[in-house]
Image 1 (cartoon, rainbow, N blue to C red):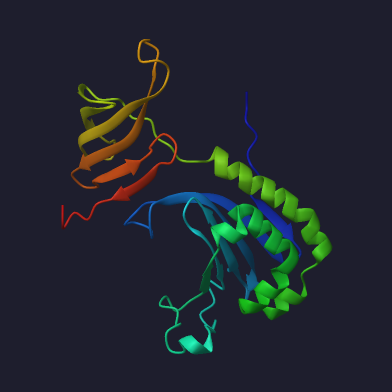
Image 2 (cartoon, rainbow, N blue to C red):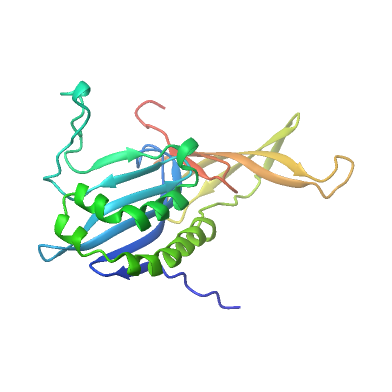
Length: 241
């Protein structure tokens, strides 16, 4: 059965919405995470420019005003004067509150639908903000939301390793060891942390799964939390390990 490609780009007057799945690695990107990013783009001075970005990840739940606007001014509270400058020099990021805002994709869609012009103005693009048509948004947002939610589930990055060539039992977990070699040439000892998550201890058809993995590679040593479901991957600092 051929699976239909997920539509990820949607036009809404002067702006374009793009949703995509992203996998972040710890110590490569900001932290280990994955989820869906939603960007709002438009033509600015003849170039396609990101005006707003929403991060709807497992951990990272945030939105950024003007991530490509070098002239955007930070306007923190007066009581924090002198301590609110953006260290990156571009864009202003705010965190979503998982308690008050709930699901990040749902919050993003509700906010886009109701307050996109205000956000574009805050990002430094008032002329584009004036061109937003709420009727067009009302038609586009449901499709964008469906796409983002499908990407979050369908494109999730997970891995299934071999269980190892040498197995060591340790109570309710076991360790599987093997030597691995990647096609790019890297490799080394892999340690798989395994456990049974289903079935009966008196039956032979228990469901074994890998709950952690340590890849002690020569060039890119790293480890995975929940490689078969969560798959948050963190690379070690080779200077210190």
